[in-house]
Length: 331
Image (cartoon, rainbow, N blue to C red):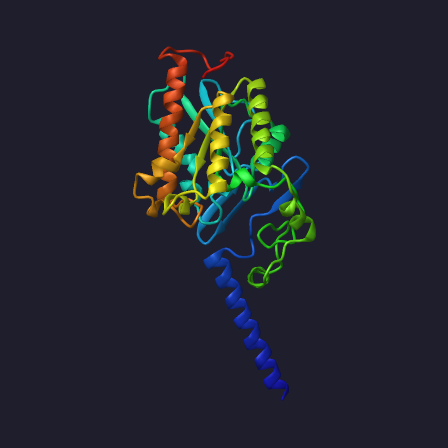
């Protein structure tokens, strides 16, 4: 009897060990990207992380950016772009470090001969479910890193984003604050249904002009970037369903019109991908209903890179100007 119990326990331990090893090697479970609470951004990725999820490499630097460590001060003769966004910019677990949208923009910008530039850096400051107020908070927290260009990448849902918070940080399995004891533990926690806390639900139920509040956050971001002698640019990617049938829903169409009018009134260059994507074969460019695929990152990244390069060349009037001198109002 004792031998049978020992055999069963031993076999069970072997099965658990094999399952643990499989989940770690195959899916990267047990080492999820961790988050920290932040009074400005609500939450952000914990700094200094390097891990793999489902074979994809994820690297977070000392400033909670998705990318390698950087110098806080821009290197000489370098065009530095600070890219802000949510999961579309961040790429999530489904995007390898080498396939990020920010890297595609950097590669596109490095191709032409830009006046006064010997190098290009595109920094990736982003996190899942961030909105304009989170992104403003990031710049207020860390600054613009001496970037001449700050590129805010939005999607339609961002116009309706709630206020920065850390309500369910560590409670929601998508936003852990510590490593789980086992990969099996993480798999189990992700399989259970998650219900938002009353505090988070209250933020979602909060009445008022949420679009207007987010536009105000972009206005304040614009002022902050200008004060740092940089230029804010806006780019908007649509939800996949907006490219189908009758297009955006009525409330989305109104919100988009408000953003277009706002950008024009503030003299902020704005690139809307709605018509651009609608006129191409957009299906392979999407990973799901909102996020871009690897091919989508390449297509959108090339488009953004070309747009920024053209603006830069026009601003410099095809003449060399040292990037170490104040650029003034480039656009």
